Image 1 (cartoon, rainbow, N blue to C red):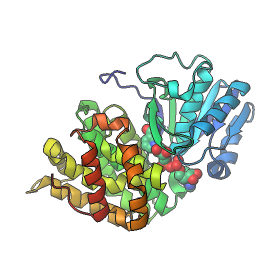
Image 2: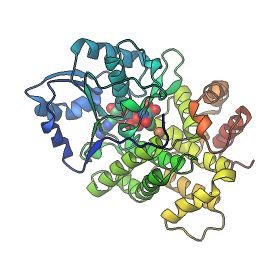
Image 3: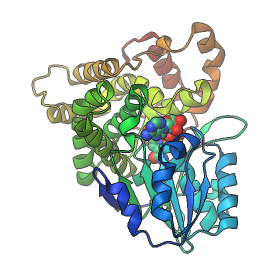
Image 4: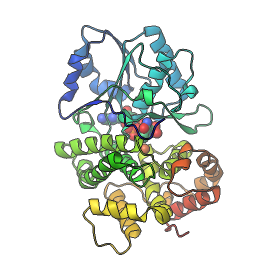
Length: 383
Ligand SMILES: NC(=O)c1ccc[n+]([C@@H]2O[C@H](COP(=O)([O-])OP(=O)(O)OC[C@H]3O[C@@H](n4cnc5c(N)ncnc54)[C@H](O)[C@@H]3O)[C@@H](O)[C@H]2O)c1
Ligand SMILES: [Fe+2]
């Protein structure tokens, strides 16, 4: 793992770039997807591979488990592809990365994946990803999020070698996303860009991407949610999500994501809802370390005269969440009984999240208890 090296795929971007699949010269293609996506785009994709052997693994579900990824890995090992192609949302792309790893290294299990080891992947197959949501940026990242069968805990794993060689960013694919999915995935992208921008690992390269992604998302996400057929907004949000992917993969997310992983694991909210609702509180918690960064973000958003940059940015994030119909507090989406019943599980999950180590301000168990409680009650973090 080297924080001074940036690895990005060849990226085809823009309307109609799906047709680049025509130029793929591979003979045996293992496609990783889910049932919805294959129903929407299966015919279109298959038409590009008339002369090749394809096998479609469409069993991925949101927040993929180790069991399903291992099943895909076993099927790939039998099929012996020379290309693994993932097409779908972040869940599918993460599953495809896990399957690529398991296919390339038959002697390994998923949990052997590590950013600190060189696995010599890519000897048997090439790897390409096509996102159909505009959010996770997973197509450009070295991480995957795996749900542990049994406990339901979401665990981040990764390897630099699962960054694909090719990505296609065709805004026609997310064009049909319903408003709720557009909002949830787009807010995930915003949380990536903001958390990466305020991180100590942020650098000149990621800063350019993060700030531009933030700018694009504030401007175009509300348009894409309100009018999904607006092609300009769709393209800008799709690009922003991918830029933010490169941004956070080469800086880091922080505890909006740790808290989000735990909320997703315990209450099964979508990833975007989970990280989005936490962002305002995490901005407040990080204030002692990050206020200068908040000023940079506000400048990128053309706000130059703020007397209280933290309060201003928190207000703008909450306004954006409200505009795209997402919650700004946990009490809006969790009953008091469920909250009390599951609170300890939430804490158990959050304190072991690997991203805690990368947050700009150290957070202890006591902090997480208070942050979650304040986010439940919509109180400003004040310590
Ligand atoms: N690896 C990373 O770097 C990274 C980063 C952030 C999030 N994640 C993970 O990604 C997952 C979330 O991914 P996501 O937010 O993209 O959602 P998702 O992949 O879980 O998809 C959600 C739903 O949207 C449907 N869908 C996808 N594209 C569609 C389209 N164009 N039209 C209609 N329906 C469509 C899917 O079939 C699915 O039912 C989580 O598991 C999260 O932990 C990974
Ligand atoms: Fe995320």
